[in-house]
Length: 325
Ligand code: XIL
Image (cartoon, rainbow, N blue to C red; front, side, top):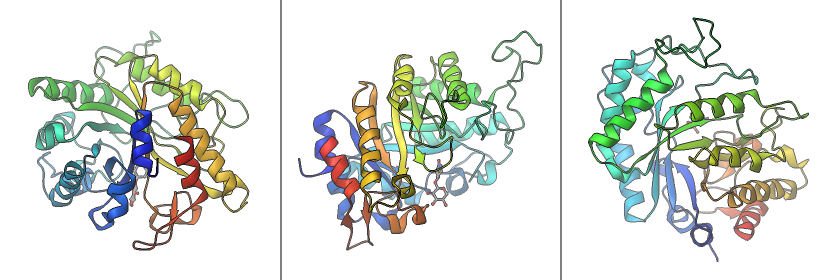
């Protein structure tokens, strides 16, 4: 095959990209068959303080583009502590209103939605973040349960609401939870990845409401964010719960390849693609931008193209991915 999208389709995967309307040049529909709005569906853009929708123009542009180019859309994202805009600190009732509005606004034109993003804390603790004040899960009655039945839990309650909306509207949209530093079974040095284990517990506990898990895969030099050899095994254990797994925001710091003009980076891309291909329920990979120069981590040179719009250059990493697919 000569494009990523054709190769991925042959392999039974989607291969996607995060973008904004300003990036929708022909490379997007030639190379990718899935689109994630990089910023335009975040609450900071589209949510009012009551959970109503506003400013959906860019999101509509992206959804329409995807539809006319036979690309799958991953909606991103509803419940997130960052770029929360007017929903920062919102009640569960308000979050639920927003969840309903966002799901029904685009319906089946969005195949997958990140309902909850980055709910787990940093530094491999396995704990929840504290930004949503109504996020309990602290085993208040001390019985050692994952959560107490009387707790409110923003993860559980957001997914219950989302699943209810999907069912009431007979949608086929799949509901995902997304996070970073959950990619490996272990982190660098062989320590257990407690954050991944916490995510595993969440998905196992709530799997009647959760359809898919996103591994962001912003790989860098951080010991928690390195590519470990057990990536595939970790994908597999989530898949074994019956959920789809996606690599949702892939970029790979070129420093991981010791600056050897991108060959080490290409090998790392190969590893990630291979790990996903080897697990049937790993159904798609999304890179977080087209070109290094346009990346949110531009100095890491982590993407598949260099150069700017109109003069994109395929990197060794691009060739490796195409070849591996
Ligand atoms: C990033 C975007 O790429 C930037 O343009 C924006 O300024 C900040 O957010 N995890 C996520 C994404 O889930 O939404 C983030 O996207 C990158 C980290």
